[in-house]
Length: 253
Image (cartoon, rainbow, N blue to C red; front, side, top):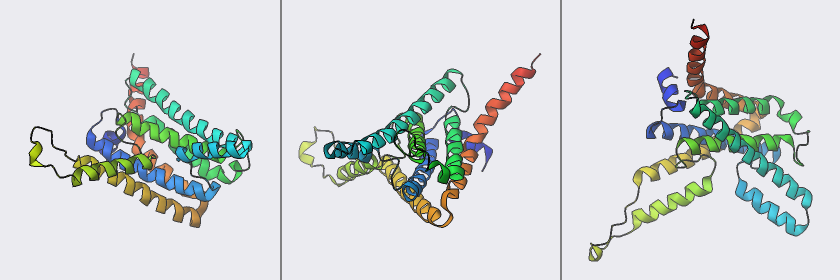
């Protein structure tokens, strides 16, 4: 991967193009992780809507053990997003090049932990829920917050419900017929660029899901290793830039 492309993709300086490219890439990673996680632990770990709904159902059914299990996943997702916010805000104040790269490197490390220790982690109970579920929910919260902060909430990589809703809205605008009888009223216009972006994000998540499902079926937990390596390739250059600057400061007389 060209060094300058990696620097543009995950570095401090942002553009609409780099945000789109990184968003589509991370949507693929999220889809693969989510699908692989379902085969591993029989639960989607990016789907907080489903987790909160199941918590409400289980309260009504008196299954409070499952309520606490859902709460463990929810709190892990929130903790992941909070961790990203802390890392990004610290990096911004320090004017680091790796503002967005550092959370992605952490995600890569956690994916490797899941891939190498996943079978053992599934036997360890965390907050009323297996550690694998807590770890994956944390990873999903971490990643979703990276793209949300990076794009000022324009792009999300795990929230497919919101993306599909926005696709429907833009298609409705595209199909709307503007009557000439109301020339004084602003015409309804679809944001075609946004429609294309949302469609690419959704397709990328789906493609990642296929990759994750087939990959986990055939190679198991090791599927996360290529995903983690891809994240390292994306994020390593800005981090190395910061290390080089830090080394120069240390060696300066």
